[in-house]
Length: 213
Image (spheres, rainbow, N blue to C red):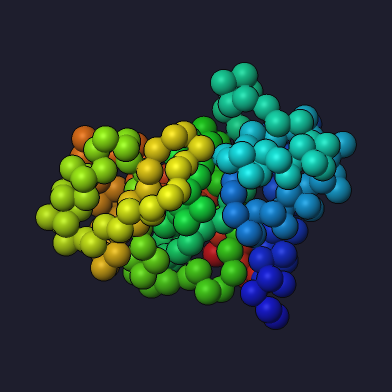
């Protein structure tokens, strides 16, 4: 099975978790694109979707799926999204596409978080994929110095601006043995908007091709 076939299979399997009449939280990325295509086939069964990015919003609307405001919908029953890394405890690194803040908000507001990945995203210890951190622009250098002090190598994603108007620092050379602790520590650095560690609120279910974790 190719990587794209694994992604498509995981995305189509996630449709089984969609409840009739519900509003579905939808993430961002290459695997989620397959999920949105699959969701379009059952769009008559759902009220609409809450989207984590402008990219996903465009695709949802192209399929005729209503995109709703989380403030208006209240808590969601389901959020479906991909990941850049997933450990055996379903803790994740996300944000390779830069949508980590909205993704984290929707995940926090959802009763069930189904993560869809290909096998290449599974790791024993998080950190091989650089950890994205969304930062207020004026705090970029301050946050970078704090990250260096913690042993990381932050690299500014030059030329990229998030949908929220902020910048991303991608932190290399981290071996994250305590994801929950590190997530809390990084969140305390002044100027950090969101950390791409989804450890305090990990995935509930991980679908990896034909496998369920």
